[in-house]
Length: 184
Image (tube, rainbow, N blue to C red; front, side, top):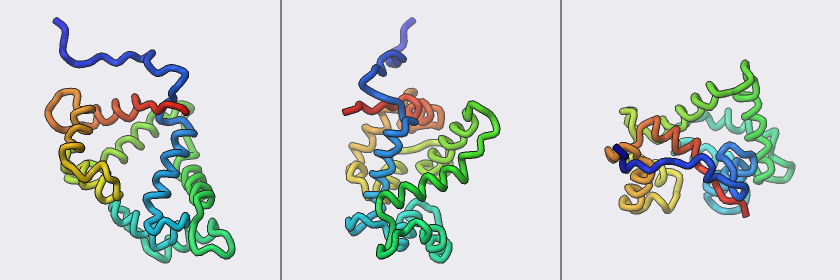
């Protein structure tokens, strides 16, 4: 008997789109993160703005540690990171934390990355992302998408395969691995 669950067509991602893990998409996502962290919109992320953004995400860091980490990437005459500096810092951290892959495929690292990302949204640690939890994280990031619970509930239902009103890790993982973005 057929189910009402929509089947994914693996060939639906054609030449006009690319996978989530593409470098181009990562650059777009990094730019969006930069813009969110740049609270005063001066195209520079100060150490204070970085500390505030990390704090909102539950990632507490000592101001002195942030200053020493960021300082080598700040260009002379600037009081913070321009996008290019932020990108260089990101590449450096990526190489430090993720560059040393012990096996060739990196699937375990992907799973670990997805698990860590899931935990950011699963605020109460119950193994599910509710509409309310998603709304809280979107609001912390200052994203307009999180202002109305109805919109957030629609986001959840678009990923919620078993229709229980929440996103479990497997639904989250499936969503993250199937996202594609059209190329312009």
